[in-house]
Length: 394
Length: 124
Image 1 (cartoon, each protein chain N blue to C red):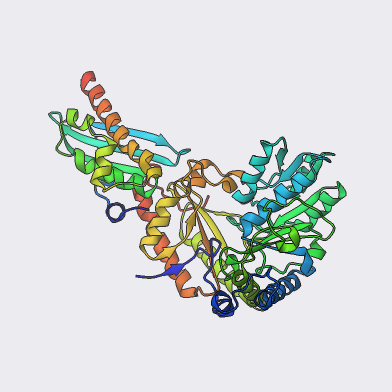
Image 2 (image 1 turned 30 degrees about the vertical axis):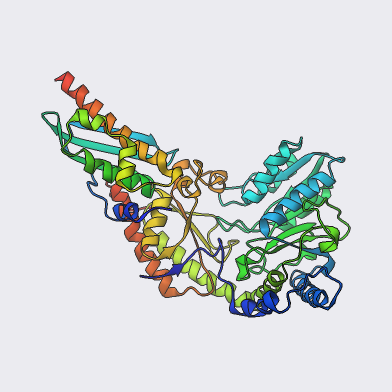
C-alpha cells in the first residue's frame, strides 16, 4: 500500500529541525514568557528570538509582529479588530469572494453588527478585477482584504496593486498570506500592506501557531482580551515551543525557498501537463503555471463527483482534498470555484493536489496512472457520461 | 468517516450499468446538488429479476446504490416499494450523519423506476 501525501495546502509534516528546536521548550525551558524570574526570562528570550527571526524574513520590525494561535485567529483579529477600531469612520468592508472561511465567516458575523460587506470580483482564473474594486470603494470603506495566494486554486493576487488602490481611498489593506508566507518572497514594506496573516503549519512548522503583522501606527481593537502578553494586544500565555518551531520552520523555508519553489513547481507542472494530456474532459482551475502557487494543481473532472474521486485515490494510498459539497459536509460546493464562474456540476467534481518538498516525480507519475483509472471507473458508473467518441478537454 | 463495509462496497460495487430495455427506469437528484442516481429494473410477473444503477455522487451514494439494487433483486414490486433508506444504511453498517441524505436517493430512484414500470403496464 502506497502512502503518498498530496495535501500540503491542508497541512505539512513538522520538519526535523523545528521539532528538535522545540523539544527543550516542553520540559526543560517551560517558563511562562510573562514571568519575571529566570525561568520566565529564558522563555521570553526564545520568544524574542523567534519574533526577530520571522520579522527579518518578511522585513518588518519585531514589534510589528504578534503571535497568535494560527491563520484563523489572525484573520479574525485583522478583520474584526480593524472594523471595530474604524467603526466611527465607516462601516463598509470589502473582501475578495475567494477568501478563507476565517474571513468569510467573520465578515458575515460583522454584518449582524451593522457592518456592510461587499465583495471584489474575480476573473475565471481567480485574479481580482482591480477596476471593479475601484468602483465599489465608498467614502465609508475602512477595510479592504484579499488573500495573497488562494488555498484552493493557487492564484497569486496582485496585492501591491490592491494596496495602492486601498490607500488612495483611505482604507486599511490586509492580506492573508497563510499559503504564501515561506513560499513566496514577502517584503511587507515593499508591498505596503497594513496587516498580514501567517500560519506555521503550512510551512513544515507546528500546528496551533501563527502571527499577525500589524504596521506600526495602525491601531486595531483586540479580540482576545486578557493579560499583558503580546504588548497587551493579544491575551493568553505564549505558546513558547510553538513560536520557536514556527521561527525555525520559517528559517528553513526561507533558506530553501528558491530551491523548493523550483522543485515543487516542476512536480506541479509535470502533473498538470500529464493530466491535461491524458485525462479527457478535465478542467484546470486557476491559472496555468504563471502566478500560481508552486504546490497547487486543482482540477474539475466532468461527469463525476469529487468526493468519490478523493476516496478512490485514498484507496490507492494517495491523499488529496476536494471542493465538492460532499467532502466538506455542507450542501454547497466550493465557494471559490463558484466565484470563478464554474457551473455547479464542475464545482462538485473538483480535486486539489498540493505537492511538497518530499514528494517525488515517481509519486506524481503513479498518481497520474491511478487518477486515470479512478476517473474512468467513476465515469462508467455515471449517468451523465455517455459514450463519447472524441477526447477533448473542457 | 466511512466504515470498512461502505468502503468495500464503494470499491467493488455490484450492478453497475443500465438494463438495455428496462421494464422500469427512474432517475432522481440533480447536478446542482451533486447527486444523480439512475436505477433500471427488469421485472417479470411483478418480481424484480434484475436491477442496475448509474450514479453521479459521493462514495456513500455509490455504496447505497449498489446495496439497494442488490436488495431489491428477487423482491416483488410491492416489497421493493417498502424498502427504506434506513434498511439500506443498516445493511451497510451505518453512514455518517451528513451522508444520510445520499441514501434517500436510492430509495427514491427505486420508487420512481417502479412508478415507471406501472405506468408502462397500465399503457399496455
